[in-house]
Amino acid sequence: MTTTVTGRAELLALAGQDLGHTGWRGITQDRVDTFADAADDHQWIHVDPERAAAGPFGTTIAHGYLTLALIIPMFSELLAVEGVRMSVNYGLEKVRFPSPVRVGDKIRLAGRVVSADEVADGGVALVLDFTVEVDGSDKPACVARAVYRHYT
Image (tube, rainbow, N blue to C red):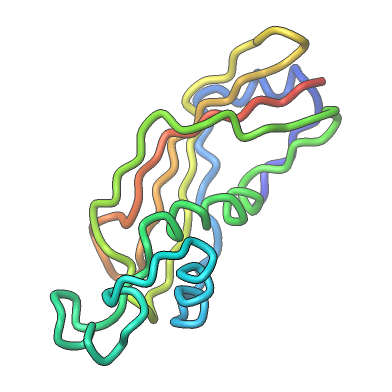
């Protein structure tokens, strides 16, 4: 379920809040191939199913940066911010890829607001911890701490 907040005071009140989980989304070879084309990263472990079948994971795997990029659309399932004039992705403080996402896996995002602080120009900085989970795996595919700024 999406948490919806409106304006500065509700953004600031998010500090420490668990945002829950998104729905599951499948990772297809077509998605991986499209990302490979966009990133100009055609390493065989991502785009050659025949060769990858004999590799360490038994199949092709998603690029780590594809997994990271999918945080953006999944995050919109967790939090909607209204009543602001602009929201920006301010950056990442830490990113790790503890386990691969195999083609055919399903992933989802878990999010928690670490902090919410006032910044210059009427802004609120949200620091969030994200975990990309793989269905059926105890180990996450990606853990990241992200910073977003919302300006009222």
